[in-house]
Image 1 (cartoon, rainbow, N blue to C red):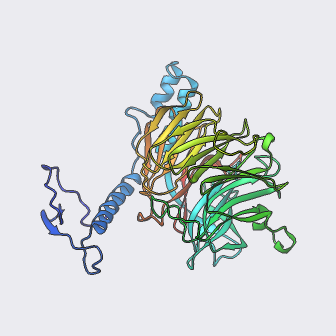
Image 2 (image 1 turned 90 degrees about the horizontal axis):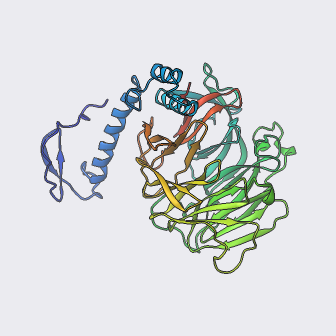
Length: 465
């Protein structure tokens, strides 16, 4: 740990003096100068950064040491003994075993290889999204001169002993920032053949949704773009013979996207835009437009019904049955819920009776859609302005989210208990918020379990066994 990061002993609360900063190491006050002075070593921003970095280094050191149980008196021997005595049901036993595994995950760095070794691992990761079987990862990387490039990471070579993956880039590059991506398929949700496609939303560089909390775009700024890319473009040895973009068209500023897997709205995708929702059939080209009173920052389709759930900048969450025609007014809205801040992520649980929602106030709530009531709240998440996703793994009973403070937190789905907080391997900043994927089958049905974390130019595996 860096010298000078030690906290001062507990003492009486100190008086806060306007324009001064108290240094606990030197036990004295220092004057704060204006932040625009380049020669000023003491600004509120620099002080806050130093405090956060000290905390991260301390947690990183603790995280790499012997792990303690997330619950008092919880270990594998006690769990097994209680199970044998019939004091634990099989469901509760499995859930608590997963908690122990999460607590014992160890970080290891993954080597990234690719056809062009000079390119692999040279750009900062921004987004990683796994396909349905967690065999592949679609990656969006920022590039130095602006814009983004795409790649697909094959996880088949990832094993307990071999920590290597193959990353394939393609020829497509966008000078826009990518705001949202998701996997899609023209055949089946678990299909991974040539029909697989990737849907992504691109926005103008001047229209970054995560730059600040208030609205940052106007009607006169650079328009957005929707693209559907065949996954085969990334692994073909002869890309000239492969089809190009399946679909690409300009839109107003786009914030989110979602693909529908319900047969009644087959081959349809939605894009959340500035004050509207656009639902498009990729085969026929037919489009439906639903006007909204606020920007749609997050979306997810249900699978049992062709219903789309939307989260807005205003804090409203509403659903749309896409079988009905768009019409004037907003009478087509079905379920309506409300948060006090902009909604950044909506995720349905498998039974589709419950909806998990996160917002820009750092609140994560579980809503019962049958009674439109919040039934659980998960505390500890940190967010003020970023569009950050939620990750739900119901089989393991886990909820995972990365905060604006760059910490990855894992909760118990059942009782909202915070199981683990994982500090970022890199110093925290708004440009280095980790993107994660959690699965018990990374690399397919015979893959390895664990958490994948992409941050800066690096990819890490937290083993889960």
